[in-house]
Image 1 (spheres, rainbow, N blue to C red):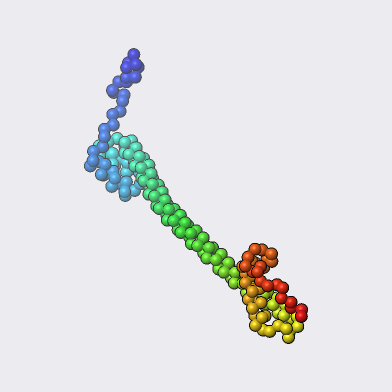
Image 2 (cartoon, rainbow, N blue to C red):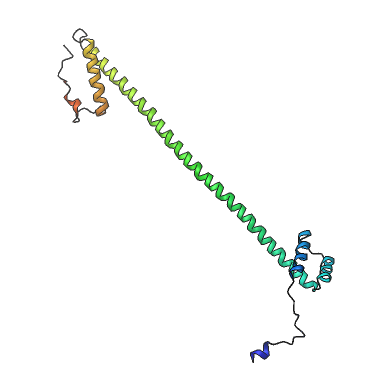
Length: 180
């Protein structure tokens, strides 16, 4: 039953024959010369190849679709390669920026650290001079002030100036009477 319903007489069916390699080469050359098929050109090719004009039109339509797809694939591949290159450059630049940030941070720490050391030393000298000026200058000689300065500076550097912390600076003799 299905066979009788689906079968059509062969006379009403148009049988398209497959193009030979020579016919395809001629169509390819024609396509390379011009992608658009004019009606006159279609009939001329149909006569030369011995195929219906509609088959020529369909071949051209399919060829244009394949050509567009290949062109898009090529464009996509080119863009993909450029994207990968740009992303690699971006990652390289990000690593370079991070390295420069680390270097800048170290430079700031070094500058800040040196400034802090110089500031601590200046404060220690000022405190030593203040202590020396509070007492009778005849009772203190310059060597004692120098030693006191060194001890005070060491305490400030080791203990960050915290009096009462347990470190070797606590053992400094604070009982010396500077007011005599």
